[in-house]
Amino acid sequence: RMAQTTEIVAEPEAAKMILYPNPAADVLYLTKSTEIVEKVQVYNMSGTLVKSGGKSTESIDLSNLIQGTYLVKVYTNNGSFNQTILKK
Image (cartoon, rainbow, N blue to C red; front, top):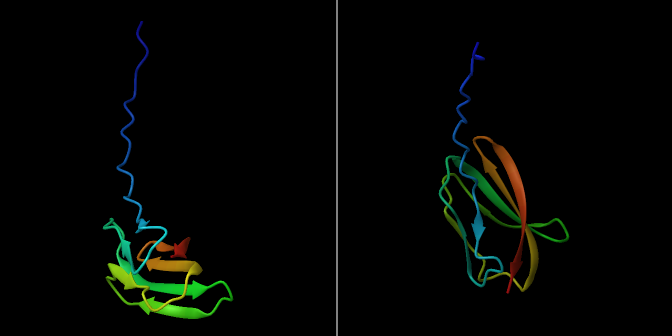
């Protein structure tokens, strides 16, 4: 007698958004993904908002920021995520 097998089909994983390049010199780009960007906020290490972008942002100009570490918070239609970036 043969055991009955059940095929498991993996759902396609959502393409994760990536911020690049890191470290960034002038412009920080967001990769295209299955998520829709609602807004992007850049904070310095003191927690002060220093840059922001609106709906469907694909890049952020960092040229007027001083060198250092920043926290980028990206809000999407599926929630939000944080990423630390270096400005060189």
